[in-house]
Length: 412
Image (cartoon, rainbow, N blue to C red; front, side):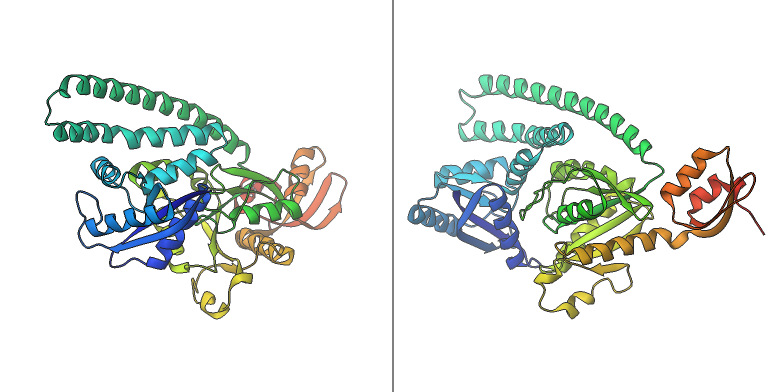
């Protein structure tokens, strides 16, 4: 593993322990290992280094003592700050946005996610080109740099703008395919798993697949951003057909470019009928809920059923403290590694789905076999009798299907 120094910049309202944990976890995900820690409380940003000169010297001393050549910050640095830090320290400097983009690029497995990450990288680079060349020109006094520099600048800018337009067009084609796939799932309850990165969403989906599905598992690991690609699987919850979609994990402090790319990976959330908001109950619940709910506001999810899933309860010492969160919301406490807990989760999902179901008696003529097949496949039939012309059924049915099959419903 690559050894690094991690630098945490702390504002007055920040939780230092959480910031250290989150950056170290991201470094581990990227294949690095933190061997030295530097933190600084900042009320005013140093325009040259972002951090103070004394901290820069501390970093240089740590790098020399520990034979380290890479330093990773938990903030986004400007082009000039990156340049100044590397010139001063003679070390490789990585900022927060570059680190996350690197992880995204490493974890992207589908064409869509690779396109989105490449687009985010180019949008991150484009505004920096002007600043970078302008900064270098000022450092050199402008003599001997203006002609070639400007030519290189314009060439790079045109190439990036051209690539951005090409990627945006390719992503529109991908979205057309996704719309067709969503249309094919319109008669199924679509559920999205959302939550902070590494909260256990993929583990829940894989457990559900093992118990209630037949499709292939999705990748999961104890790493931040182990899942980047959106994965949708079909499940059968006792004649309640659902799709369960695993989404990229939320994280705080994303740049504008990363936020745009990140939110577009969550398009499936907009089209879901229900959200399972998964919380890692063992770590900083307040921060997770705040970040998730702020991000969901940006997505404009509308009025959806929401179930808060407090996961990793097997790692919690104080269960009472966890129970105080979201007291008025639908919620459940589980460990995704326990089958009994996943069965309880399935039952809670079905109960929420059926909250607006209505008990009806229906008469389905023998000639309408497709309607009968649909009802038998998607609902639990409570009673069934036959007469000379068809089948009489008693069942609980959704509002949508009530309106769709109203002519078959026997009304008193």
